[in-house]
Image 1 (cartoon, rainbow, N blue to C red):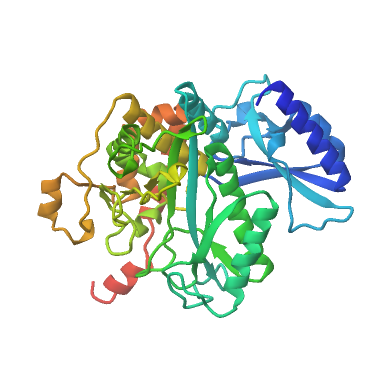
Image 2 (cartoon, rainbow, N blue to C red; image 1 turned 90 degrees about the vertical axis):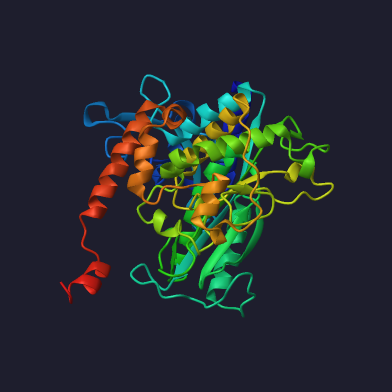
Length: 447
């Protein structure tokens, strides 16, 4: 954003906040694990915050500063100003803005996930591209946060009778649209009480902000109705988990660089190189796109989540799917990467996906032949013959692959890379030291 644009955006924020009687402004930012953090200022502090930011202690934020260098500055991005529709309006309205995090001296903080994504987007911009994403986030509604009791028994695309889950989804969409977040589709998903709201594609930085807002809104609406919404990848055994399929495209100006009217299936060579980069680096970026121990309970054969590293133009069993081209909709030509889950950090996830794709373009990687057969139904020998690899089967396997990845190190930067690896190792150690209900049920009676 240039100085003139920022000045105009700041003027708009101050004017709107005054006219709408906004009393509090929440300054939002994200830690390296993708948890939303915030603190509130009053309207009286707004102009100062927009000019020079607000100081805060970063030592307690995961992945931020050490105790001896804890002072941080949160500088609001005025283009992200939105009034929160679920808060009271009269005389005490509440708005939010996303912030970029800086050192007190004015340098961008390298541990800020939003900065990490901005840095990767600049690399794409220097090549002449704008990176667009359109994620599909799935989630569950449960009766409360202590159990996994479903609200409904519906299935994929079911039009269930008016019930609390349908009303929750409708109210969530209305709030998102009121906050300027475009919604493309919404529907019941495959599993009982599982739902999906798909956001209309936009540039990746705006989309990462939108994902953070989306997750909070889903949870907020559920809480207001006395139920619980979760983006946990696999909360219930033996049914489908929740994914975040990410649709991606690169534009040059107004032209979709992934579209080629003369190519087979209208997919440009550049798009194929991008897909090849994703396929090549998929194992080493998986700890970022699927960062929790529980993420790997979803990535299992038989539950529609991708396990094998393959691509196809229609097949939904593959890691990468190329949605069918529709005449007249050239801008909709895209690549769908299907392994990420909705509990990831969207800033870091979009960063590593873009980095892998851009390397494919720069080095002109060629993808293997598309696999139009159902990969899950192939034998191990058939997959080996086709050269089809697999994603890591546990967080531990994923961490080891990421730890040796120069691509991820460069995409995330040294600070985030090292802190993220350290955190995930601790997460794995905590998990593997636990004695689970499964072990007690299976082994205690016989050993």
